[in-house]
Image 1 (cartoon, each protein chain N blue to C red):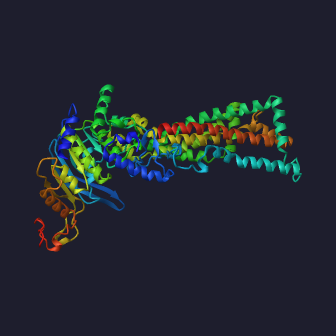
Image 2: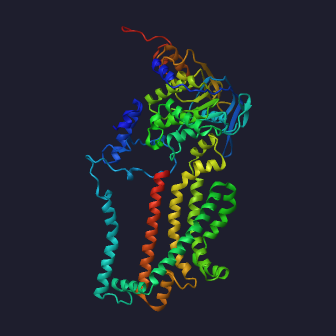
Image 3: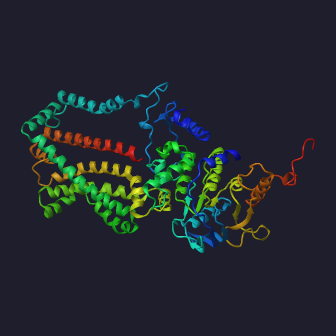
Length: 321
Length: 296
């Protein structure tokens, strides 16, 4: 056992030893230490119902004895994720050079690359990416804030739930494109209408997930909080808010993805810049290389921003969960 | 065991003690709404608990033990009768009592120290609060684990933290709902001794729900057995709801000898009351007699 557990009384040592045995089964049959303390899984005694991501992932197995499986190695995680994109790229190259499909239907990777270089030389590529990213982030921020506030109202107050849920559920059912004519009439064709549409897209995942998470905060913890004199805002900050932090973050992640989805719809509103405009414009001009470019850029940007939120998520889960 | 707990008592005195308060349960009844009417769980419970007394509530599973405890703490309201602490009605989530739940119910994102601090009365000054938390963690033997999160400690340690949190409230009445039920047998015995040490240092009125007859006899001044009255000749009871079917005053001072014959006899009576056969009379051995020596 570790130093820390040696200082504990006999019963704790027995507990910790028993727990170490069970956890060792899962952790490649090696005693696991974490910060000098044998990690004792609380089992049925642990605060139940709280969604706690397993900590095993962040615990490196002991250096002696235990062999790490391939799927646990960091380099393999990165390389493994790249296998399919690289294979797709190779297949694409092979198909387009073999002449099986005419280039008017499937441009070669090189043509897409040249289209990117061409746009970059005209100073358009950076501009389009920047304006699209800006629209996504502003719309996402507005939608997420509203989603958090309304989600909190609906999740915490029975009255709020009764009054707001049916209406919001109906509004959520409206497809993104259906908003466009209305938004143009109300807000014109400038940035406002586009950002509002993206905000609508980002609002609903946050609202839905936050409201549900708050409604399902562990009742036992809530009762314990109340029994110890917490009410209203103090109960919210001490129990409910920390309990839903993991859910809030996954809601934000989903909302960001949704914001990118709504971007293209937003940029169909008489825009003259952005990746959605690039798609629309290229479609009308038959520039299939630029269509491919825009699609690839949307995929890569979406994945990159998602990865950023993922890093934030890992930090927050370590801190709160 | 007695000597060990005596030294522990000297080693961890609590500077200021709570003024224990008497608890009165008068004609308590509780019915729960169920499909097609209501189901009476408790009825006509009358119980006077003196300040500083330890009362254990025993009873078969589902008889309303926990409900009675929750009513005493203001976590639930009775449908009949009233609960009083110190002569005044129990308010919702009454500040005069502290509840130790069956599960530790610690906030997983807080350290043990910060979880104990949750129990401090709202008006506690910051520095005094820190001092009190440190003292309580020391009392339950967790001074070295103040900075750990609940998931990093064992179930017994989490339950002790939960007890420290309840004590941090400086309660006049301590309500414990099967606090050691989920612990292994040895840890449970140690926790019982710890509770007695705590009670000696800080004599709150303790109402303890348990399903363990030995635990009740070891800890309590008085054991209340809840159950359903049988009708005449074993017929089903005429009225719904559990009542106090037996009250046992436990003789002797704590800590009690776990192996004493007197306690064994009381255990037998309580087990009878719980409907458990002690398999003595069945073999023609008169219960209460000593086991004959070889040769029979």
